[in-house]
Length: 355
Image 1: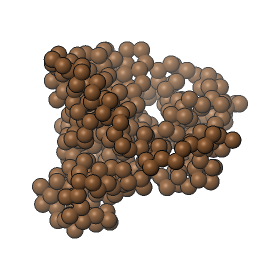
Image 2: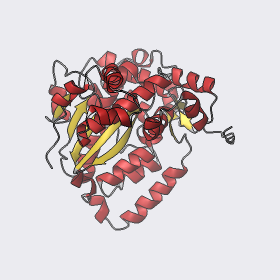
Image 3: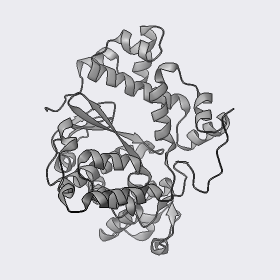
Image 4: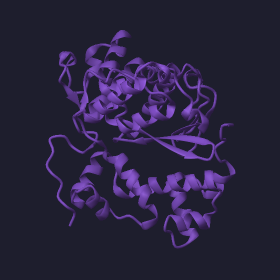
């Protein structure tokens, strides 16, 4: 039996129904943006369980579900393809306490991305960035932290715009990002090109941002400021002590499954890892609009894509790595995960940015 965890006032893992997002942080930014564009308050707050007076309550906290409802209402009312990008440009570093202060003092992109991941509940609660380095390339994957469902594309665009805007502001330079999207190309890509650039790749089966690895450690102006290192350390310490959940349950599960994907992970073992009963774990995943097999399939597809893309692996090698006993079964599973066969994928691998 797993060792009992102490009862905590703050949950270790958050989900879409966990009330931990300060209303005066990202939700207030969305509210203010929509009000500046004259969206009526009733239309903006419909279904959110909030009133305009709540935005004057400095202690109020909302769930990711409420924030997503607010985003959806703003998007529906504004009817503009620019909305996710306009909101995203204002999100980071933000004014979210110590985590934002530490992010503002980042001395390079690697440090900024580390802070974004470490303090995702404060800085990026809906999508968690995960950095992967392969050869001369840096790949930033965006992992679902809550049940985004139909709003995932909107949130992906918003978070990508947030990171691009922040990186440009803190570095003073335009990083040569390549953007990969797990969707078909939209009819009009003008907004993506205007806010992200022309290096756009659709149909990639993952949402990711790529750039040459050398950009990770290029010094930013903050690194040269007197006392910058001490300020950064103080901000990181304060951010680590901030009250709130440690990480998203979905992101933590994805990390666990990536580590164990070759061992045929089971729901029971994963539930024990998080100190849940299997029934409770099923309910927690169902609340996010998913289930264990779907998350396992997602992890397997990410590993398969990685092996095909960056290691040049063949079907036999990938099938063995994922614990499949025969290649035909792997092929069928891969097509179910991605909608494409391995041979289709290899014929159209992502174009990678030049170093």
